[in-house]
Length: 238
Image (cartoon, rainbow, N blue to C red; front, side, top):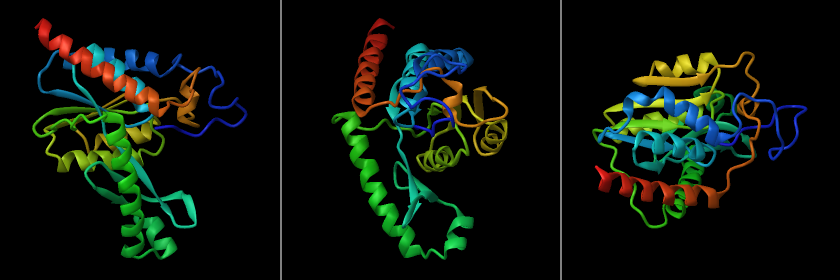
């Protein structure tokens, strides 16, 4: 996912003083923390697009695991779209923020209307990223779901609920940086959480990176193509 910029820092294409050079560097660091999952036939790496894809590409490459995207989109309050009343994940799973829904008096028809619109956009993007390839079958698999960082963790939580519905056998959330509280909260709902760094105070995901240039759709598609090629090469060499 992309995240907000730090106050006082240059724009998203600027350089900061973070822990990681860029997302690819963060992915290599994260891969070393996931070494025990290397070369296992039951492991799949999923990336939350777009920012999670370069990170997950390095993880999947190091572990010899297939890579796919797993989309999550925020459900914005109508008229105040930056405020999330929930999220929708691949497969149509919806997670609702009950506090926001109550505060704004939002009925189920409002949530359903926004969810349908965002669900269509989510599906369109995933199909474009995969370029005709089918999604990976997650049933019974060890799924390592990767993002470039977490703030509140709401998008990741929606993904986790969807992965449970897809019958994933073991869910690992892996991110380069997140608040310790968010890692702890996710640890209560997944099998394992790997947070490479938990900066304190935590201001934004971009704080962890020297280069937090926005990931493009073209980069996502290219990395997914390269991951398919690497997986095929790895299988032939075994």
